[in-house]
Length: 389
Ligand SMILES: [Ca+2]
Image (spheres, rainbow, N blue to C red):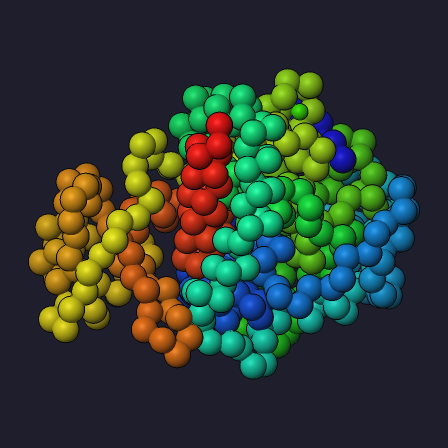
């Protein structure tokens, strides 16, 4: 799937991940992130968000039907009213929009998947880690790195983001393109844009978010000439190797193989460049560590250190004055730090001192567990690549 690069600024406000920072800061979306991730999942549709995701259905080439059961989205009067209003506002061809929405399906399975689990599991970093830092993913990452080494180096040069972090993201998101999602985007986004479940604690806000993402998706496909009924992704509308939401695709995706198109499904180079560009946009600091070891004791002022959560707030001096012990390079760290807590089910939590680069990774998916998995997969693959040149 390829989308032309937008030749003009998109005509509606981008509700991007960062746009959701303020409002989504302490509320979760979905079942498994609720259980496993910290308090910052922003509802991006990464494949890791569910342990019980629907079984992938092999799609026949060009098949436009959804593998998931649903009913016509257009049955809802709100959808028709929206289409009438949206076509002129988005400068979309009304006939094209009508024809597209007439074939969209409301999928009950998607409505279920965005609801918090009724019986959330205890947060468990060790269990979360084991899903991503394992031989299959490390080997796939090593192959991906070697195959795309020149592109990864070029991205590092151009955007200042390490190859390892890009490799870690694409590995955690989709196992290097092996799990990019099998929901028709038009169904997933259409369902969440008009039938976001009321039972969700932030239903109104989330529905507005997905309405905007649906509009971005329609803009992307109409401008590129891509068939909106053929694009597939996660249950919450994320696409391609890096699982970009439509608004992120519009804002941060780049054509990094120089063929004049942005293709996050079929071009690993475009995916690599786009992930690196995303982090550049979210203030990745070139050369800065993501985190440091930290030692705590009975005198550590935990209330004060945990209050800002994952937002880097404390200077090295105030961090250590509050009883969070640092050593070596960490003592010379130039920026603010956060005390990151990773719970381990019934066992004692793990802690690290997170830097602004740790925080940057959580802008991709609002979870410290996610960020730590990306960092550890990145490190594991980097070690493998370096050990066997
Ligand atoms: Ca391209």
